[in-house]
Length: 292
Ligand SMILES: O=C(O)CCC(=O)C(=O)O
Ligand SMILES: [Fe+2]
Image (cartoon, rainbow, N blue to C red; front, side, top):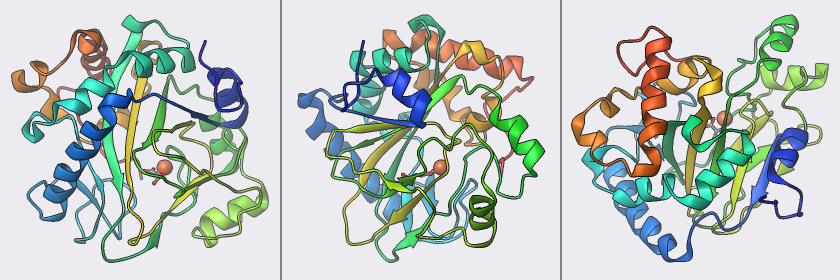
């Protein structure tokens, strides 16, 4: 049973607060290799050699406008040839934490996203306060309905360098917005004064798992190095519930022999589960339209 930095079982903390901070999910020996691989993919994304990237000026996919990069997409893409990302995504401590968090057996885990969040070079900027799967304008009754749906998965940020970019409103993940929160998310979405906001302060190597419907925002600073692994996994119990959130990122490059050849044993079944989800969702490709 894995506990968080306050000795609370991680699944309990995530359920109660909507986020949980955990130490040591990266084996010590792997940290420098992950950092080196990040340097290489960050350079490729910044010089335009790698086109799958998040660009300043746009918050949600697709990222078509701009040139200053705040995220690198698809670290597991075989064309990047950076096997350490797959090694970590399939590593024991991480899979064990995810299984505990979403109460699922290893063979029911579902392979999903693995991206990188980085500091832009030219502009400081803020992402707006948001819930990943509930747009700000959503009427209250609809918001209530959407928040009642279980997630069948989890997402996380793992900091390779100290990272205090993320802000959350603890315990906002399962309730509708208060009138003040609603007003901020719609009319002042970059507010620095959200009631109850908490800055998530990660030391190198720490991970925050967070409910993607917790109210959150992030502040990006060009002057402060950030290389934070940003990933998710699900469980097959969700049927095709996670298909939209996951496939909106465009994952059809996983449907290749090159990609499948890179899967370690620990991720073969989770990946087969992802393909089965696409089939259940009636998709013939691992891609769908953006949510936002
Ligand atoms: O930068 C972060 O830590 C959060 C990013 C985020 O909220 C998102 O990609 O939806
Ligand atoms: Fe988000």
